[in-house]
Length: 123
Image (cartoon, rainbow, N blue to C red; front, side, top):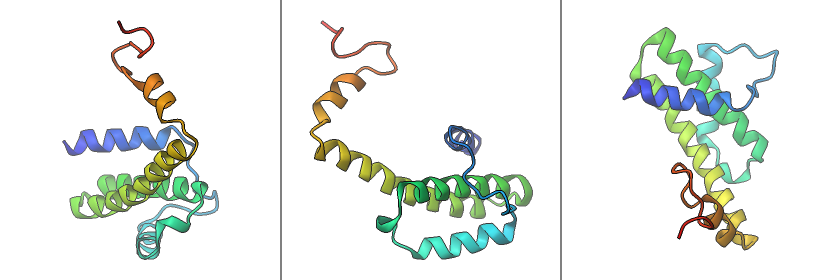
């Protein structure tokens, strides 16, 4: 189960280029400092780009913790922060859909995804 979770998170992170500044090397100290600072902050004031950066960093830190420290506790701590920030992104996405009256279009287009069908082709 842990491996599946890490694969899914790695896939999520790989869909975007790593947003980590090139001059910043990912180290246990960087991960720990970012986690400590970020976990105290409210997510509602972050830009979308800041959300992506934090999600990417926390997945990378979780991966680093898994590969080098083999510590489930550290992995889960980074993943908890990833999910906290991801929840903010999801909430904003749903608010955007609602605010722009796109719910019906979203439902129509996304209904049946994964089964190869769309709402407009079902009888």
